[in-house]
Length: 302
Image (cartoon, rainbow, N blue to C red; front, top):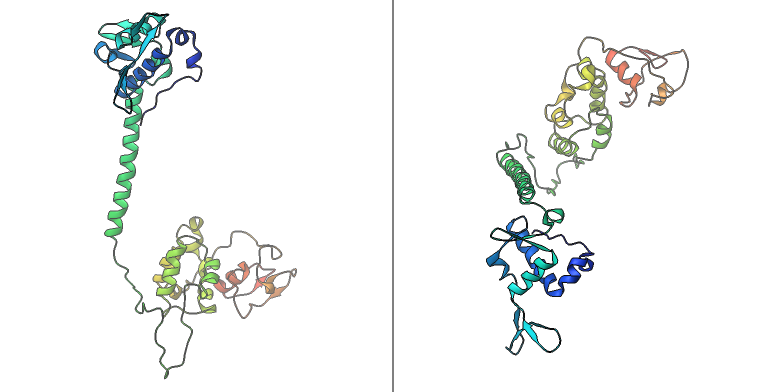
């Protein structure tokens, strides 16, 4: 939908006051015609006469004609008379084939600009529509889940002859593992993979212990962690079962045990050699380095 621009002081302009209310009605109708048909303010002579019907029919079916009077004598109003009034007031200019609204381009958009904006809008809508279509096609052509849940029943009937157990759920230990995993992407897919690998995945400390040495391995620390697999890929590929490499992991800088260590065992203490703790804390840098190297740490440093 297009809009006509009219100054809020339009009715107080000296030309408009001199032309009168009938000219105002004709001017608004002409502006709408030019804006709708993109004529840049040109009104053909044949169109000017028909912009407004100066007669109207009331609710009783009676036809009324608008007239103007000055004293006793009066004249019926028609399109030609109002057009002449607009020309005399300087609101319209006489041109070849019709009339031109004075200063039309100062307030209304030109045909060239309107067409350019329409083209930009059409192109933007087409790009958005193509993007949505492409996404739908990609979703339809997506490969099925290679490891579907073998037991989709959320409420299986328990077997009285078997020892009851607590099944793994996406949140059963997932939050702790997610906090320790160094690459935080695709959490929703990782939760799905966590559930899918419930029967194969080690529980508790064993899973975090594998992650502890992997976090400081050469493959995971080079190039700013570019080669750290996505969490869901790690789980589906059973990467916790990877064998620990024989080389030492590089340590780029010292770690202040009073600030960067999350393990209470390694927190504090100055210049003393400590043995490896029984359990590995995946949030503790010395614990992770110690697990990788299989040795001792000094002040939280390998």
